Length: 266
Image (tube, rainbow, N blue to C red):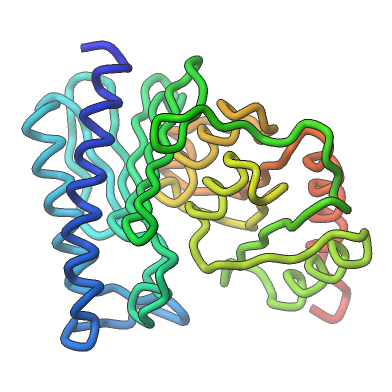
């Protein structure tokens, strides 16, 4: 089965998973919610949606490995790995904010080959295939090539692995450089918005693979700039994520690295 065929099946699975997640979202008042850590929640919806995605992937690709946020990894023999986040933006989800997505990425030989991000609340499905471009609901998307940091908004994620003061310095640096700061509490959705040209860039000190691999491929295939990373290493350890439009990326890296150097008091 070629990548195009795999991608279409993946898109269908993401949409089906999104329908299940949306059913839970409509009954959020009755949903059991657990707290894993500071601003880190999980619900029955997360677990059940991941079970559905895993089951569908196993039906179509029984020899592939699967890595997800809420359940233990499944080993495979094909060399192809699926990386899934059933609901990215769970804090939004459990607070009835319609800014969360289903995320599925396909990885082979250290490269992300397939990226699908489905937003059920707005009926938007972002799809990328390595070497074949990025699409939103079947239509090609691209990042703006001529816009600078002063021409739009940049999203900033926050990880509890760094001091909040460092993130505050980055936000201030973006504002001082003439940009605008955006945060929607879903890193995957923000990355998709960069690919669609709605945001000019995104940065976060540490993201897990299920949150970022699909979005990074979307940005790259839409003509944006993405830091070079080994997808297998990201699956194992996670890492920092910086993406941007061509005339924004270098400035964002510079601001990020200046802002996140701890001061002597931290």
